[in-house]
Length: 212
Ligand code: NHR
Ligand code: GAR
Image (cartoon, rainbow, N blue to C red; front, side, top):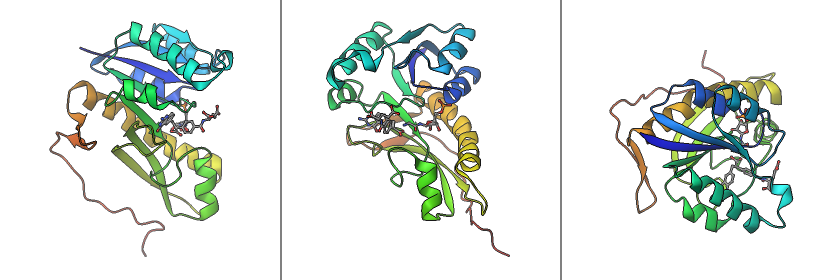
């Protein structure tokens, strides 16, 4: 059975979706860069070991990333899952986990990398938005894409209503991707492409706003 470590920074609802999905893997630990992350309590309630590596107690990113990787490696995970983890990682850290480091991002990459994705999408008036699960590379939010979920942006959406609609899809696609990883159904090739061994695909269009 594969082993995973989940990294969080806050609420941890994506982590919770993973814990509740009964995935065919061993969730070895949940690690946060903030001691006050709500998700740590949730993990403990599920009987998962939790750890904190406080970025604020390190002089620079290299020092933080080195400490984080040392701790992660004590669990010998097959995959490291960023579930609302909010610290940009150094190239050395990313290289150490090449092909084993996954992130969920609240936008349709390559649009709206970085922070405040929902506010920026609303500001631009885009009509569809969503989330992306991707392999992490040193190039922030530009790693090879595994899956995306698209939602409509509705006329009276606020940051809150839009983020809620996207988050619901995050909680569906993220456990699916981790399940694929744990069953060797998806991998990052040496050329940096995503290879997915799956039969079913859907060809529906989402038109937003819909046609009459
Ligand atoms: N690291 C690398 N090298 N590559 C990626 O693709 C990464 C990554 C680390 C995190 C998640 C990402 C997201 O999905 C992620 C992808 C944090 C920031 C950020 O600006 C940006 C993108 C992501 C995560 N963080 C600030 C920083 O200075 C701190 C912000 C805060 O603490 O609230 O690190 O969105
Ligand atoms: C999620 O929407 C996730 O996609 C996003 O933060 C939220 C975390 O919520 N991640 C990032 O923005 C990464 N920079 P959660 O803690 O409840 O999973």
